[in-house]
Length: 293
Ligand SMILES: Nc1ncnc2c1ncn2[C@@H]1O[C@H](COP(=O)(O)OP(=O)(O)OP(=O)(O)O)[C@@H](O)[C@H]1O
Image (tube, rainbow, N blue to C red; front, side, top):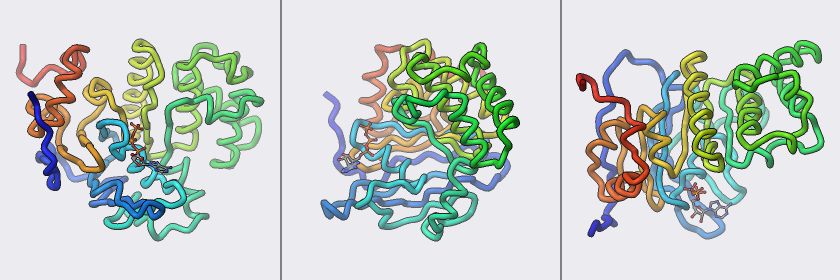
């Protein structure tokens, strides 16, 4: 039987692949997250660097601290939570120094996010196109007509057929997959450099999930977008991520290049996650190894 080590103070880390040094757009350094209400530390030190066009994945069981880590990078921790140690830098600026006005400027235009349950992030009584156009007017200063045209381009960019039709539809008229695309269109409208996708495909069926993951990969390729992908599903991470962090109970128990971690996991918890996923055919999501026939 697999036993899980409780001694997870030091994550199993692997060197990242070497390459030209590009400054990270997001740099998380030993970030700890504390809950003042319960006087307890929830996240015990997360570190990663995210460079343009790359994807970092965070996997782990429910309640392991994945969402709080994302919310910390977006400056939207719940009221009584704080980053109690370590640092988070966006484009070289320590977010602890940002004023609310600076955050407002940064959100959407430098860092953006897509969460699960897209319907709850859209206004049910407004047509979806108008909601994207509104983001464009507020964030990029486009006039009404230009914002409409750009919103149509964005709906096409997220592979929605018939953007004109979708533009005029209300959220309740769209399927879950279409809504998630609309939300991605809104999230990338102001040209962010970082997109956090927190369980963004979890509620979707497998085919639509695969399409959304392809879409994120396309955007990364075409715009140099840097992605943080949070999932409890290793197959999602295998498909999209260059580096993976495995979290358990607020600890990063293992971290490294995705292929290395999934091919030869060192921590018992990572092995357990992989064993659980074997039945879903994790192999088919992994790119063939270099040199393999
Ligand atoms: N708003 C909140 N109020 C109180 N506790 C919270 C709040 N948000 C998170 N927590 C606590 O922090 C822990 C980490 O939560 P987090 O949402 O980061 O986990 P997660 O790994 O994203 O889980 P899931 O996969 O279920 O979304 C949870 O165990 C929860 O107890």
